[in-house]
Length: 140
Image (cartoon, rainbow, N blue to C red):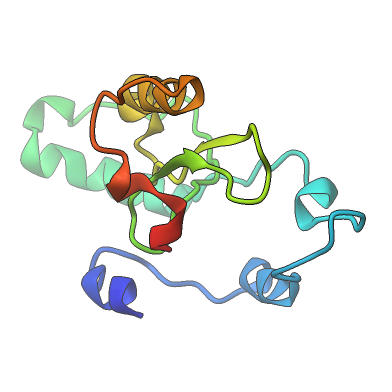
């Protein structure tokens, strides 16, 4: 709730079938049962053309040079986001040998090299590039 309050005005909330389906998913499962991730191996959501058109309409208001730009192709994807919007880069607490580097909140392309370096440092037991504490799994 804290993050939703913080993001007020920055997000568009839509409670539809995907939201309701997600609420029905189990939050815990045994190591021998099928996880929700095994049911959905590929996520290929449709792009929201309404939001794309809104962006296309607004761009020339700030940057007039883009007044004649067109959308040639659009795509959508899913983002992995933690409750505090900071990634987890840490050892998996119950799976020895597994290093997590997830929850980049859509910034994985930019932060990927540093996140990969920190994950490698953790995996190898070397002095980390940065203090890993803010990215620990235990904070959640």
